Amino acid sequence: MSARSEAPGDKSLFRCRLSPNSARIFLKSVILASRVNHELILYAPPPPTVDDASRVILSLLAANDTQTACLVVDFRRGFATHSDRRRGYRATRDDLLGALPCRMVAHTFQCVSAIHLVEVELTLDESSLVLLFRSEHGIVVEHKLHLGEASRVSCVPSEQVICGAENVSSLSCSSER
Image (cartoon, rainbow, N blue to C red; front, side, top):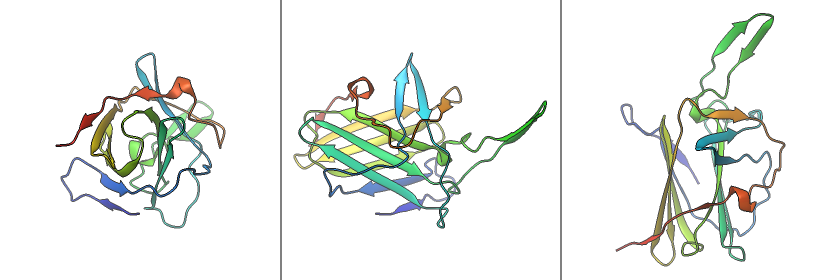
């Protein structure tokens, strides 16, 4: 499991590939990306301290019994981070989550035909997060999340359950020829 930075000039910040090998993963500091009122809301806990600042962790949870899968992307602090220090009246704060690369993003999706996944490809740029899923039966699912400056960021408790029905998005599936 690895991540690599793209060459300068490439719009994508990085691409990742993951082959799932576990049906259940215990998650810590889980966050959720969902759409409410047509706005993408990113929830992120405070970035953890890690030795390897460029480390990117991808975890895939495939629950065959509920036909629900969950991809968790953990962008660790220090990986192409952006810190905007703002000063206000009697207040000073660092907007460490102001840039997409240092956010922690998770998305819960549902697709009946693409449960037994064999490959997940992630493409991230300044304005979107594209998830490409391939199943063992040749089903391809592409899901794109548009991330604009209007996206709101809020903190959530760690180990929050993210597979609730209200957070599941339906995706369309197509057969790979």
